[in-house]
Image 1: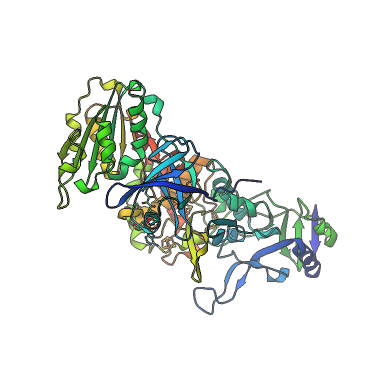
Image 2: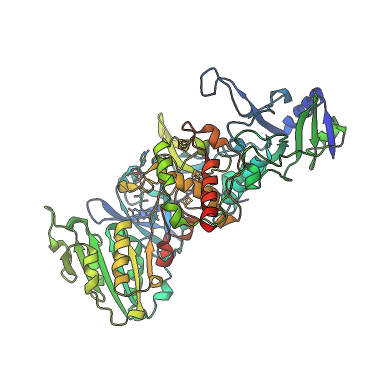
Length: 336
Length: 273
Ligand SMILES: Cc1cc2nc3c(=O)[nH]c(=O)nc-3n(C[C@H](O)[C@H](O)[C@H](O)COP(=O)(O)OP(=O)(O)OC[C@H]3O[C@@H](n4cnc5c(N)ncnc54)[C@H](O)[C@@H]3O)c2cc1C
Ligand code: SF4
Ligand code: SF4
Ligand code: FES
């Protein structure tokens, strides 16, 4: 069912949604850009629809809204363990088609991999509802069409801003509020069918020949192992455990998990000084293979959703899209 | 309610024995029934958590042999009987023990790699009729690193036990190794050409140790004509979860905490870091 809203009507909708939900959307984060006076688009709670940035891709991905950068798992006091409390409110997130596909990738690792679902991920994930933001036009670094992630049907409602109105296709109304504040109108969500850059995705990479490909040395010479590409990635899921105790009472403290990156030193460090993938080139290979090969072997879909955020974030202008394309073209070249 | 797979349970330390200057064996009160080669996540609240193999188990207890190398393991070393450790697990795929029945089992270990296979050796020590033959080849850096000396002595009553040290040091000589074992200096790989293999098809090999030791030891056995599929190894990787979530232990499409730590060599040799 389609609806249209004036800004005032949409804000009433938001106000009512916020009674039982936290509503997150991409907004301008003041002074968070590369230069101190620059703004960056990232996620935060919103109260008014005018705050939502529609005409840019967010620098950060939506994953932090339900998979926090730092998450307390439990508290301990002496011999007692107490699970961290969870906000029982729903979580509504404004995000793009590729981002929703990325959440489906996170679900694979966090819910399906191993013998049981990740307790803390599932706890927040079950409250998550998607509002997909239409993509009328592709942004510069996007390559979702090549990755097959440019559309989705997995949303409660869609939204786009057009001629002063907010247009929404509602699949699953949330508490009947979309119907209550909207005026019926024919709407179908818009997704891009082509990107400015089209990428040749390799089909059948052979690990042994990939491992000796000279391109990794080239990337290794440029990569500074800062991990920004994995931080902004909507499908990177790795974390490290961290314990802290409170200074005033060392018997009390908490166990947390924090996002980790396979590009950063220490990711594989073991006691006794052993570590694997010491060079930045090997780490680039490991990341790329995870994104466009290993994950698919395990779960049947590529982990990379082609959102292009890593390309925007890399201080060394390393482009994952270009790297995938090179591997894909080399593969075709080698076969033909 | 879904199970919280991160919350550890309490396990009382029943006993603690020193093995070497850095290694201690802990006997913990615990009801789990692990498979040989599995590991637990061991916690010291406020310090952290780390994966440790179960080195032995029995009715109402498990044992772990832990080397003091960093924050958590240093904290554990300070604990004593009646104190508590916190555990979750067991995790991972262990050794396919039944496929060793009626075979000639060779166990080759380097350093603390002896800990994860100790329970297998004890199992066959208690049931020697299950094997055709058993050889234990074990290497340590120096005589003061030798683990489980009384067990080595015990095992050598039934099995052939060879102990080698890379080099002698100022603290010890070969006398620390029970004289019931064959005592040598040199790398463990140097023992392999000498091993008697009366019936090659019956040989099953278990190799556990540092990555380089496992690679070269496996190579030596392959040179002796063993098939890859008759060799098993156990991997160590950094692990933050043991549940297939944190990503640290991933190699290619394989998660060591889920599909390992024990791998058949046909699989192990394809894993590329
Ligand atoms: C399946 C498996 C089975 C194992 N079985 C056994 C066993 O039976 N017995 C045994 O003794 N060990 C075993 N281990 C190894 C054991 O897990 C490690 O020795 C343990 O994790 C060390 O923890 P720690 O906190 O004491 O050391 P840490 O303090 O974590 O130090 C470990 C290493 O990590 C690095 N490190 C840690 N923190 C940082 C940091 N902030 N920055 C940079 N580097 C850092 C250091 O290089 C250090 O050498 C096993 C490991 C695995 C994966
Ligand atoms: S690319 Fe690296 S950081 Fe991202 S999920 Fe894979 S291993 Fe983890
Ligand atoms: S953002 Fe660029 S430089 Fe930083 S780790 Fe990723 S590829 Fe390397
Ligand atoms: S230890 Fe976390 S994924 Fe294997």
